[in-house]
Length: 265
Image (cartoon, rainbow, N blue to C red):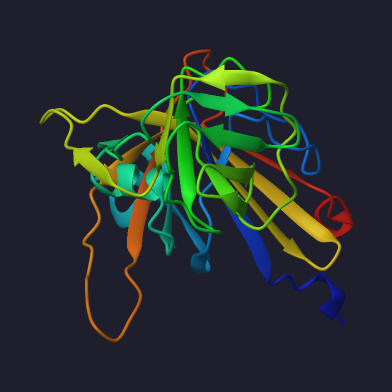
């Protein structure tokens, strides 16, 4: 009888998709945390698909109709997935690398930053708990200009507290000032030029219980732009297909790491 082992059957029961600029340091195993430059792409529909397209040329001879030899002529690999979150990263990818720009009107007057994410504005801010806000020209540590923060409490018409995550702990900040603060909600999206050349690193983690695997496209580019459906009875979805390209250093186009003993037995 052959060696039959049902414990070696794998299901990608959970996972995550990540994107980062070219040149970002990448992990060399399946458990090390991703570099801070990697952005999580959020919820996706039921996993991802890896397509491997091997093109060949068949050689036959005068004396036989059988194929005598097969020559490999081309090999390309791509990864497709469908994102569900309409955030900055997915919108930019879906529109071919479009630039998402905040267009919120800044609160007038000076903006003062204290410790524990406490913000004071010279005029009424109009923010509510859960609102996303964005700062410019901040001189306080703990706040990065251009990065969205979330209002966790409102003390008065001119004071509020921010967190780096929605509903999270107060941001760790030092005393300082910011040039302005505005709602992060209004935006405009600028389409790129006709020649779409945006390249990036794509990282994928999936797990089956304690077994995991990590795939990294060291240099990826959109193979095509997605067809986006806006309908009344379903979520907006962003189907992406990313082509794996040869890295500049000549290494593998896709790196794969895991902790599965079945793969090495």
